[in-house]
Length: 240
Image (cartoon, rainbow, N blue to C red; front, side):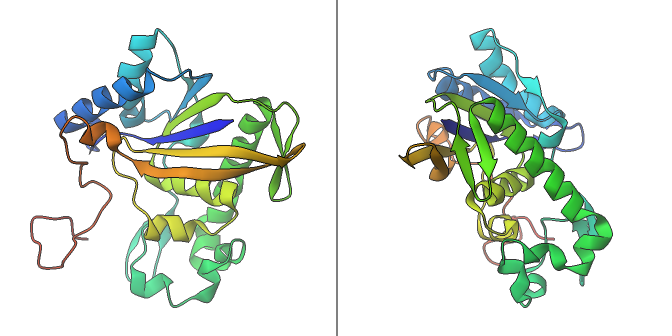
């Protein structure tokens, strides 16, 4: 089975939709996704994700199943030097705590416990496992039991912070690694494929992260959204 995790297009957060650039990105994404044989589409309930999926679904005459757990992962956390969503820490604040790199112990952070992050994380991961089970693979420990092995393609349209949660669960690592060590550009596609090297035992392996080849094929650069300034003196790039 293939899981395609798609981040929404360049966002207009003020109206929870897409910018003009975001709509162009969504159209280019649709030219990629409509070539695939997709078993099912699942989408965040937020406007920017639904807008991103719209061109693809309209061309295919399909509908996406709207999943509340695919909305952005956004518990508000009071951190040492800034307050905000769980997945946005300053490097000097989180890298000094070794437990943040551990697949289970990262949730020990008192800031996370106070904000209900462990409960929110476990809810999302439980819903993800329930979806995967409906498609033939049941979670057992850190692996998946291939109860109905298949080569179906499943598309999830969501958000970067939430995508990082999904990846951390599927690949058994701390989400802090993805939240701060990776960046999925708008309309990027991350692909995970099951490998069943022994009968009945499957593990998801990431074949591509944050692929934006559909944008480059059209001569467009990915939007800067989700990144921060490459150099602090780059005044035209995003700062805190």
